[in-house]
Length: 510
Image (tube, rainbow, N blue to C red):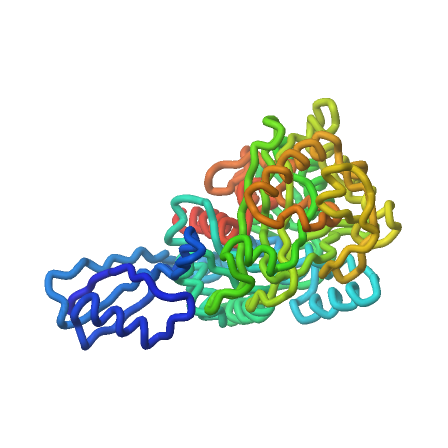
């Protein structure tokens, strides 16, 4: 059996039969099997947009073919008697727990929110009536913040090929579409993610893992630089190792850890607002057409040096998506983006954020706790402006001119918009950088100036970072690991999950 990889150009609405015919002609074979390895859209020329499809073909008719070589993550199993506690069921926490359970440890996974069905019901109730649930919202609950997102599976992290393959194959086994294994920009959509996190949880439990929902980490007992006991709202748990993966919204957890001597430092992070446009405007700008057969919705990713001091960039772009109220705590007002797998909503949205350091925001050197407190004050200020979870908003053109003209804005945001001078609510260094960046974006994407800016986007990254080793072990501790976005070293589903796996594997091989 010979093996060969080839890359083909195919129309955007190609069929499986067309793909097979192209393979047959290209390799001059009739009897073959194939697997798509990569698929990306080439839209550099709007008059000739096509898919570039890399396929791996195996056939007895192929002579002197290539060698098939696939790296796989190996998790050696043996019965182990150490009790491991993992806090947080987002990608980092879940995949750390999943890996450790597969390796034979006794793992208990704690989640402050509820299982995904109850969480979904609470979020629906919040969006209908504005009644906030501190346990179940867009930040907390089964699957973490990623459960209610676009479900992007791209990552800029290097040296995680084995981990990434394991993550993707685990998702496929749990019901994800197989295309995530080969798409250049794969995504799951929140509708798929809600099913996937439930199915993965069931598999985790079937292998002997324990998950405790609505269980809050309250404190930890440390003796001689070693965690001995985990104290929770449901009682105390003895632990031979503790993995903390609480995400970047769990402010009280950060403060508890700092109180217990866990070392943190401040770092650059990014804040701003969320941009929203009609999807057909983005489609026309990117493709030259309002629709493209075989492609769901156009994406964009833009960056700008802005004012020369603070880079401004888009983040978490959600084609055909929805802007959502992502507050983690009552009386704070934060926005984020979400989309379904089909990406067929009327609007496109993305964060528009400027990189900045907490010291610059405060005008002085601040501690990690001060950085968190200052960020929370900003989140509260946006709530106080409307005295509700309605999103303060303005048009991009008004933001650039610093003049309020448009009073009615069309939006996907479920809790309504309140016209607001965002240039007064956001910190001035961020405003000046965003204005320069938006002018740049307007030049790069036709029609971009027609969009709106909504609310406060504060969860792009964390303003603080734990001091840890490469494997996630917190500096100065023997058995305390901090992983994922909350550690300050990862961002997004794949890099966070891979961070959790790497930390878990460092314990597996000991």
